[in-house]
Length: 77
Image (cartoon, rainbow, N blue to C red; front, side):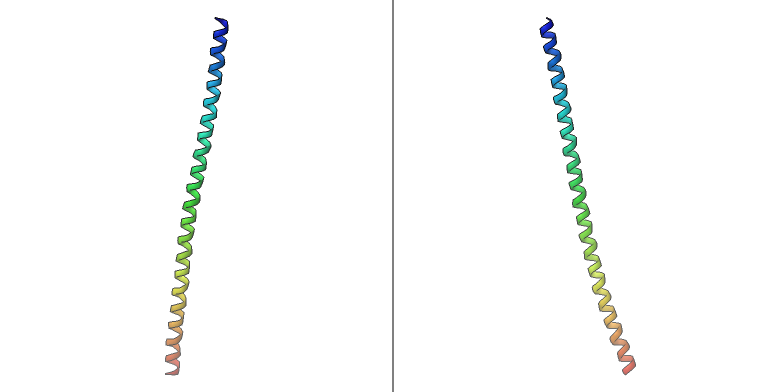
């Protein structure tokens, strides 16, 4: 009986430790997935901001060019 009780206790401890390792591995995987999603969202926002900045720069260049030629037309006209 003592041997079987010791075996049961040892099996319980081994199962508990294995469950702890599994839970830790699952937490690590969840953290990695969360970090990956964060990086993807950050990259997507960065790309959108870059596109908007580029569009704004082009619009500014067009407006300045139009204003410059209109001013030149008024001065020369």
